[in-house]
Image (tube, rainbow, N blue to C red; front, side, top):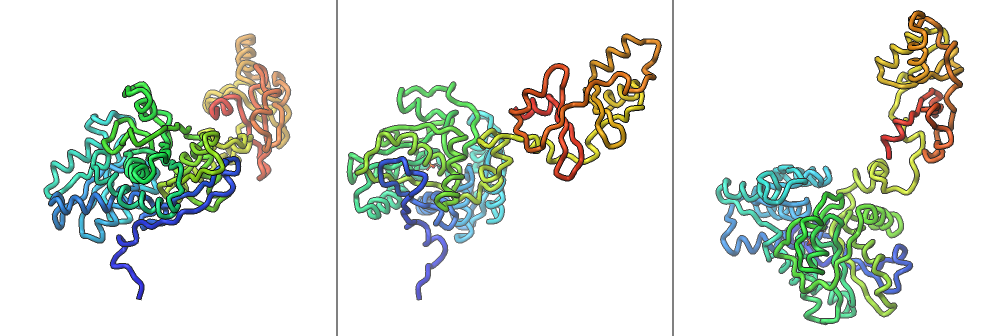
Length: 452
Ligand code: PMP
């Protein structure tokens, strides 16, 4: 019979798969080390098991003990799986920018998860590093793995990922490219490969908002490089001990948008449903394509599976809200959550004072004027105010039809927002559209401003 002793024995030996379409302009053979085949669907299973076994061997974690780690999700997943098999309790701290899917997956494996703020410095007592450290001091027989500085992390890749790639490419690999977070993957794999052939180029992918690239190029840890970004798992605001800067030949920064767009292309064009940083790695390779020749064999190592990001990069609304989708926003996108009763208008024989009251109550600056179901005019705040100020004695008792302007322009709900420019000006603050359900909606300059 062919079976494994337990699930941990299935970690590693992942396939190398040729990338065909998204790399059409890259003059080299591009192969991807598809690490989603690991049982936790990420490369981090390898280092999680190694850190755990090394901690056990060193007597740092004893039977019945508690695993503690700060994790963007994947290391936690690997540790949680190993914890289940080996009978440890798991507690993870993570930052609030990580996808909900990752947190739910950790909980599904029985782990306890503490979500900490992203935008605090690492030494802040609320940071996910500090909380993990504190818990490890407070909970007896617990061990904080600290994947950033725990060198079993990069050793795992030196012992497994590196030799696998060397063997799978029959020693023909010329370039390795991978996202850098703790640095374990790039440093361990890169060291092994360079020991086999020192000419192999090792390229790391960094984010805008991370310290790595500048530090590598200038030796300066520049705090000004640190700012929030959206990409998950790569880039840092610290220098983890696992990053071996001497092994890395070049850092390439990839924007949040380019990483996300490329991850979606990998799914749709290659059938590879992968995580955000996989998109960043591939986008970085394409940025560097002019450095490559047809003889080159490039291995892109990817970290995790796309299922962790279905609510994010694979969700059109999420992408659109961040301006990551090149398809333009249309009128319909602004009104799709509105109901028929959200359309506020006045009938032509209602008084100016009533119209003024509606504007005040609903906090709006314009009103369509209706005759039954038909729109026959438009009222703006300034028209109403001018009338009330010019006619103080009338007390606003005239019907709105006496002072209304022309109706606001009617546009199709499929109209892109950029095409509304000719319609809108100081006098015309809104357009009207009919929804697919046949009800009227108004789109104001203010609505549009809020989307840009
Ligand atoms: N991508 C993802 C999704 C990750 O979780 C990580 C780990 N933080 C990385 C990339 C970077 O890997 P490493 O920590 O080995 O540098």
